[in-house]
Length: 123
Image 1 (cartoon, rainbow, N blue to C red):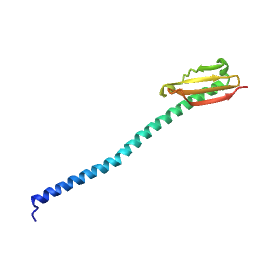
Image 2: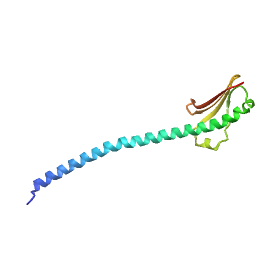
Image 3: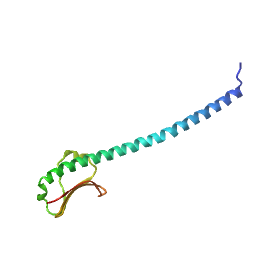
Image 4: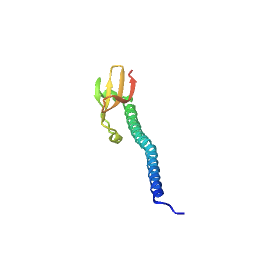
């Protein structure tokens, strides 16, 4: 059987079209997968920061609840933290808010919104 030159060109055209369709399908499948991986990575990092901040706030709040809160004046104070894990947090600060009836320790990120906080009613 002899394949004519015209049939060969037609077969090449179909192969090229099939290759383009396969590439389109592959791209359509991989783009959502790549997006989901990056969004999961971002979510995991946010949850890690939240867990680290919660651990630090819980530990420091135990010290405060044991009586250390009396060393701070009433009002809003920047609370110094010596935990090395605080270096893993994004830019932010720990704030101690002391009122006559309540004590609140919170960690605020760069957006200045409280991310993690603990409260205690004072005697």
